[in-house]
Image 1: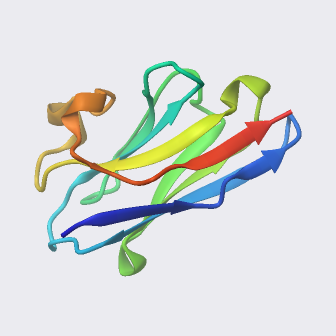
Image 2: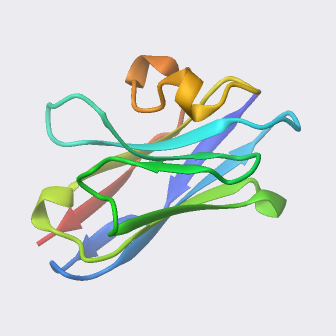
Length: 128
């Protein structure tokens, strides 16, 4: 039974940095696409960044490219999202999601919310 737990959210001033973490338990030893989504108020969740855990290939939404970095620690089954140069429009609840085993991010359509069945509970990021 796979579970994802996010942590590391908080409040920060515009221009500042935060790192959020997504720790997974119960994984089978196979590659997967792990993606960070965010949800602002009542809007739909939008895909922010994704990583293919075999090879470390990464993908970003244009709104965060060059400011956010997704990375992984395979020993800890943890995926990180380093967020720099934060803006007020980055304020949202951030969720991580894990795709099915052995389906790469591009084939999955990584930014599609309905591509994922495993989600964490979310962590709030507020930029003022």
